[in-house]
Image (cartoon, rainbow, N blue to C red):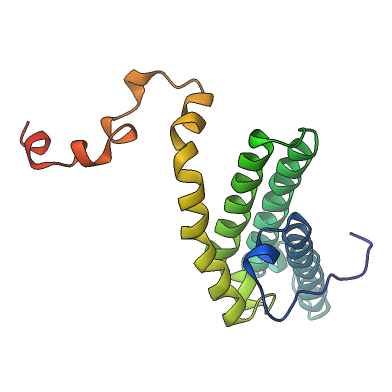
Length: 174
């Protein structure tokens, strides 16, 4: 957190978006900036005579965004640490895809990346376009990933095995 603020490229490419360095830099940037904004807002409100309790209540949006930023960065870091312990190979590759999917979904779903200007609308659009690409790459591994959690088949619906058959007219009439 004491390093200089990371610089986000003005044009994001697929390889940049999937880069763990870019992802952690972006998450650090958001968390550090939100912490700064939150501290400034709390101090400003207190200097105007607001109580600490009132100040925190009035700053709830920043507090909520900051909590989410902290949690998501911690999860991303855990992904990266687990990935770094693996030897090169298919498991490391799949974990890298999952890490990228997690990071991209976090960025796509959290309005603070646009609200506070961490990403331009063009870069946010590039991130959004990466989701279906990652889904397509993860699709062949989906059953193995679900199986790796050890969830008994009885708890999985038929859709987990064959979406087309599960949604066909004959099965829906049962």
